[in-house]
Image (cartoon, rainbow, N blue to C red; front, side, top):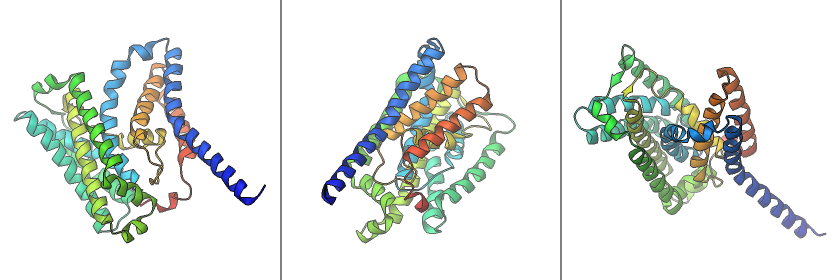
Length: 318
């Protein structure tokens, strides 16, 4: 057997391994649904509407972070963005629901621009910038809602329908999918994640792309804030708390490479968000303690990180 045959066999083997790895999140989602449905004696299936109601905010917000992670960056401020935008939605809902939606989106976009400025213009690592803004804006949220929740106009509940929440989520996903798969902007994102220097030599204004992605991600989470308030009717001091952790776990469970690049797939967002919510609710329905749930979630998270992490690229997370 010559070297050419050995190389071809190695490439075929690697291709097969990559295909199997790409199918693991789908297999995991189906397996989780079946296992928890059996363990809860059908309660999981009977609670499917409640479970889906919890998916919307995570799924919409995760879409914005998906774009950021595609280019090899991170964002830990999503919970704070959702919190600030939720308060803005509540304050503006008494004047106009359209104004409330726009206000939430603008608030999210402004915080995204704040992150993008320090990341792009001041050359500070993305995870450092967003951790700082997470605490900064979490302080504003505590100040605004510590004494009592910021309540929205009672008419907000008129929009608490499956059609509206599913419609907003589907619209975000469809537009994001088209942008990611069929536009130069989406191609540049994956290219930046794979190798930013090469993309710069190709004439792409990478700093501009990175800044716009943070603005876009913030705007998407601002829209998620409207869905959040539609569900809850008010913003408490804990609104958006731990959302960034939920998003990160959801994307990794969906097979998202932490370092971004060419292996990124849009289905990572959908499958991962569904898998995270099913796992969390399944553990709750089984009556496990918080400590036991965190232990199991941590083990599952580590397994998926081990399966999907690109060890050669982890050192260049931006």
